[in-house]
Image (tube, rainbow, N blue to C red; front, side, top):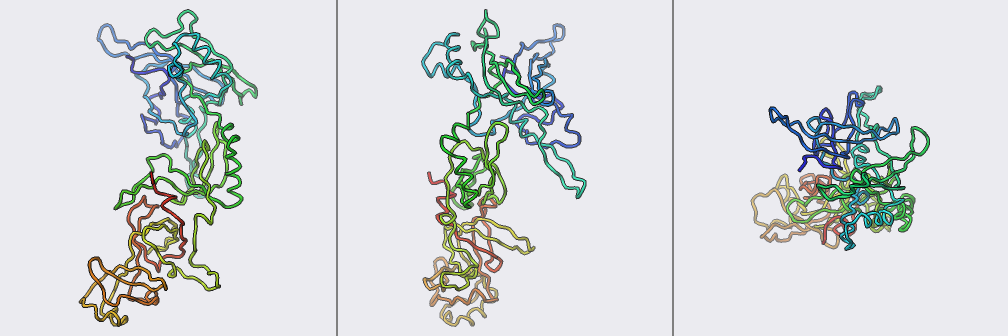
Length: 457
């Protein structure tokens, strides 16, 4: 068997991409970076007749030159290239053109006539693109700005292949229609595209193994009216409940088996990116801007269905609510704005796992709250607390009853204590983090957070 196969992606050995390491930024003079090539034909590996040294395979490759508007073919020795292991980035949009599998699924014989009929029925007028597309589309370069020396990231699109339409096909060899080693038909698809260089349309034959089929997302979007949903969400300030993608970014809450598999996004724009539509959105878990491919409907949420009371704010009777008026419920989610000890202000979603009071001077604490005098304890630093219906709190310890454990609400203003939230912080991938209430600037309740974020299957 050959080491290299038709349809695989390779790069010249001077290229910075190696195997799966493709998320590398280009700097200095990125024009020196060679293209991602797709193998369209291979020859058997050969060896030196005198020494037995591995001479390698001859690989016939193709790539698209964006500046010239042409597909360029090159023969290159396998000893001069590296494979690039790459999984498709755009979920559900790209797929291999596996005609053999389709015929088997249809329970039809693998004859040249059946292959021809299948192409005529299923592929003509459909969209395709060279398999190097995503590597070239997401290839980025960085440069310094003249103003402040900061790095600016831009796309490097010199070899980005065009989106094409299938207008015909042929067998590479009319006499020998199938490969004698693999049994796969030697089919080339005739593709048509708009050539930005010539300002006209161009056509070219390409082996079927070098191409991905491109799902017609326009049909999906128009049929399900996805664009209207997203555009209207921007106007009416609504949200989307989105699965975290890729799934490798899902995480478990520290100290439990609960998995966070979904996030909350606020849509900001609809973008058409070369061959697919995407929604740019602000992610409330990661507190950053991201983009998601629009290939399916998303669960839309109105603001009032996501967020509850806000603190500080005014209640229905006109009284101003402070952050200390929020009655935190264990296992519930909250959106907070927090100032740390270095005066850095951040926003994040947290899930409450416990509520603590840190007592600085225990003797003074018992003197202040005289109802606790019957509690026979010499000294203690932490107690747990929870809320009564009237807004006051009660304190307790695991496995111990504290007599007369009700405390007034003024404890939140007591300098001798610190009220602490023990939480799972989603911004820190579910790690346990503690937050002082007096350092929380804003709090907003999240309604039914377990249904928004957790994997309940």
